[in-house]
Amino acid sequence: METVSTRLQDHEAISKFKSLVNDVNICMFTTVNQEHNVVSRPMSTATVDDEGNVWFFTNEFSEKVQEVSRDNIVNLIYSHPVKNIYLSVKGTCSLIIDRKKMEELWKPDMKSWFPEGLDDPKVCLVKVATETAWFWNHTTSKMGTLVHMIASITKGEKYKETEKGKLDLTPGSQEK
Image (cartoon, rainbow, N blue to C red):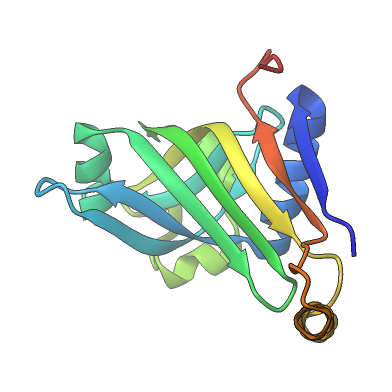
């Protein structure tokens, strides 16, 4: 099994990023609190726009909003073990209170968190302007991966992943 190491930029990177996020959807949204502790919580992705920004609905007065108000750097960790997709994303976050944008992104299942819908005075958006993402995407099933791992152990060889890489998501990113 060969390892394909990929480094994509601009539109190719955003397209790959959107595809991976859409396959997983739920991430661990990671911030740093006032005591400098790393704090993660699951969040459902509303969308990834054409610029690679990730959008979430949240409560304007939640702890995560307080944490990103102090330090707006976040890490999003997407993981789908069944599909063997893993993604770690660095970005800068901002709070968006824009009724039109919320209407555009609203989905009926959001009522689980906001029973009053968009009439909830606490509902707002968090926009994560993504910078870089690292991904691991195993194209074989979990069972296939296990078989390849056992084969590498039997042969005394290092297990090789199928695809991993870096996505430069900042507009106009250049290979360094």
